[in-house]
Each structure stands twice: as structure tokens, then as C-alpha cells.
Amino acid sequence: MELQGRLEEIKAKGLGLAAISYDPPAILADFAQRRGITFPLLSDPDSRIIKAYGILNTTISPTTAYGGVIVYGVPFPGTLLLNRKGLVTARHFEDAYQERATVSNIFLSMGGSGGLSAVRHVSDHIEITTSVSDDTISAGTVFSLVLDIRPLKRVHLYAPGVTGYKPVALRLDPVSGLKLRWWP
Image (cartoon, rainbow, N blue to C red; front, side):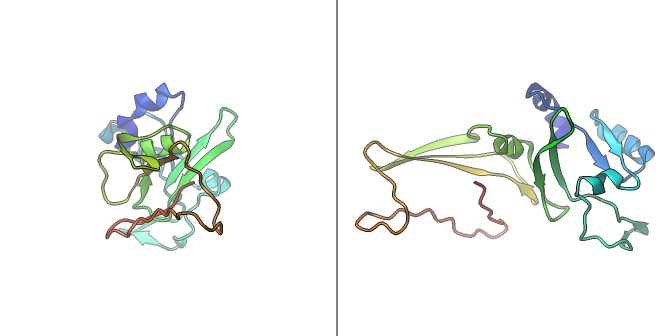
């Protein structure tokens, strides 16, 4: 599990870690023991906290069952960042339970710089440094491709509609199996 494997790094950044589920404490304790999880797994059997934070997975009806077990009450997959007062400072949620943001991707969204495997490209007019949030990904991994784009000295950028200058565009072609999203 990525979170357990990155726990020391998370703590080194001054962050804590806990997970919440609608599962009862006995199931969470068994899961933690089998997976070697040392951070708190919080039980919210009535999904009161899940509902209070607005993360109840509304795509699941109250009668949906898997393996004969009703699964209503499960939260959307994601991460809430809370300050010491319990106020939400950032949200990272996905629509499908199969998708998860990586720890590195969340660190980048918190203002972390760059990423892994940075490569610098320079032309006559522009410098672009590319990197990725993670070296290894799998299906459902939400990761980032980071582009740090800087015009070189004496190169100016103008708003759309200005005429008489050379237009510059960034285009990412679709790749099978990847869902592209822009992140400011």
C-alpha cells in the first residue's frame, strides 16, 4: 500500500495520516494487521462523518450489494487535507473507486516543486522542463506530467487576439488508456 510505504515521508513533511471507512472496527483491525498498516483506520459505520464532509459516494444506491453485502455508505475515493483545527484545506477526489491520486501527485498539488526524472529542453525562444510525479504507475493511478515553461530573455508572450506575432500552442495528443485533465 502506497500510503504505508510513504508514511515516514508524509510525517517528515509535518503531516499526519488517517483513513476513514464505513467498515466496523474489527474488519479494519484485521485489514490493518494483514497489510501491516500502522496509521489509524477510522470506523464510521453509519457514515455520519463521511456525509458531514460531503464525500458520500452518491453513485451507489442504498440497495447496492457486492457479494451479498450492502455497500451504501462508502465514501468517494480520495484525500482530504485538514489543518490542526480540523478545517479542510484541500480535496483530492475521484469519480471512480478504481482511481487514486498518488502521494507524489498530492505533494505537487500542495506546492511541491518539479517531479521525478526532470528533462530540460531549450529552443531559440523557450525553455521547457518536463517531469512526472511518479516513476511507476498502474491502471487507475492519477499522476501528473509537469511542464515548467519559461520564455527566454527578450521573448514576450501576448494574449490571444494580438496579431503580427508568431503563435505558440501546446497540444497533448490523446493516448489510449489515459484520461487527460488540466490542472492549473
